[in-house]
Image (cartoon, rainbow, N blue to C red):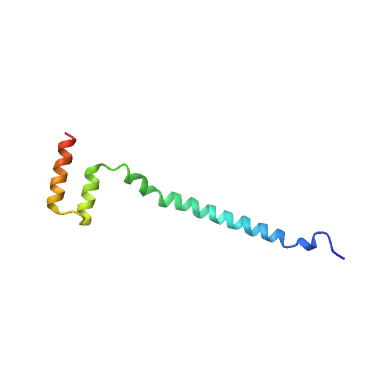
Amino acid sequence: MWFYGAPFFWIGPLIMGVVWVLVVAAIFYGISRAVGMRPHTFVDRDDPLAILERRYARGEISREEFLQMRDDLRREHS
């Protein structure tokens, strides 16, 4: 004889497991948004001179290229 709910005894723990997975995923998502997205918002707002200085500091462009581009940018913004 089956007791009330006995064939479905596994549903309760399954639902609780899903709830805990969703809670942990939401916490990780919130932390990653708070920590990971902040630097990306400032990159788009940088002025061209700051971007040029970073490129020069990383060695992507030579000193001559940097000076030429810097002078061009200063002429455009004057």
